[in-house]
Length: 135
Image (cartoon, rainbow, N blue to C red; front, side, top):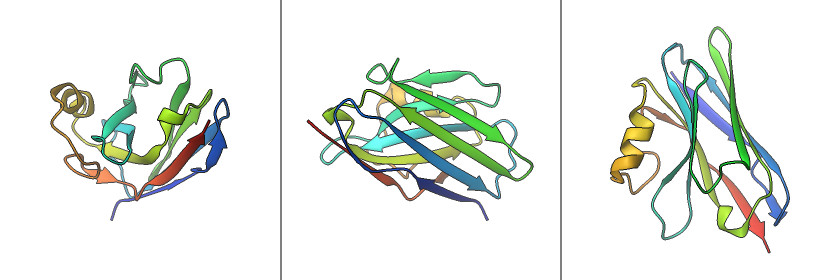
């Protein structure tokens, strides 16, 4: 089956950096979108970044210029990373990697604002990794 395993979450001070990684195995869809979501207590699930199979990217306004998403496709494994710089306390959340076989669905769902909880709607999700940024 498909498995997504995240790593890299930690506690840092404001202004610091973290790199989140997600290893996706058993997933061979060449036209898939991969992305990172986050959810803080009491908040909706928020799409943070997306990278499509052609390398095009999307970033939430709140992270533009600070976060960078990248992916490395191998035969049966995808490595998804997100470099997070200049972290702010409002970046504190559980971060999830996700993969979806329907291209552009991630951004479409985000525009509609209908996904309140992470680990729903999209095809595959990781278990989440905590990022805590202190002021």
